[in-house]
Length: 199
Image (cartoon, rainbow, N blue to C red; front, side, top):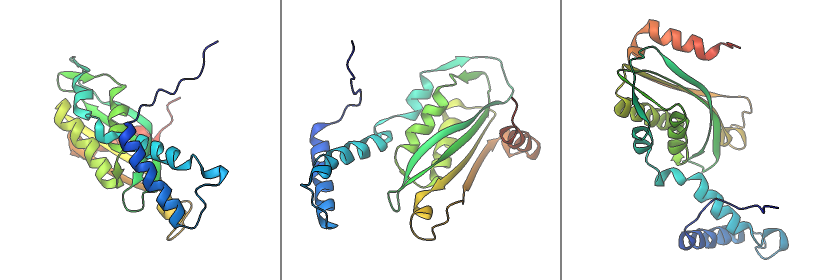
């Protein structure tokens, strides 16, 4: 019988420091940090925050460069509906949704799993959706050096849903295009493909 093993690793010194800060916050909002239900909350919250911001310790360029392959394929490659979860840097509340990414190779392709990993690297930081879109776009464009790159992100923001205007059904869409995707016909083909159900 195998026992559960948590594979997440944390710097103990940093975790303890963040845990102390969370304990102070819980106390300042008027809760009893010593009651049973909250005893382990500061540590859990610290580990959650470190997990949700692990992108600062990851290198997206290195991830891509480790899986580049020479290939003569030069048509559009699309990965759509990539789940993403990030933290709004203004309120540190989650925003979540999906990314649609395409590129047109120019002599080399990248392992398909690396593109969602690049999304995660930039999403696991304090972000705004506009910069997240730009970060992904520029990383792919500068590293793959393709004929074109396209990125579209659709996301819901808890800072709009839980507080402020409290709009539950709003979705924010951002996009970025480089190279051949700046041409209307190529961009239109990409947008049509990500909005269609091919199954």
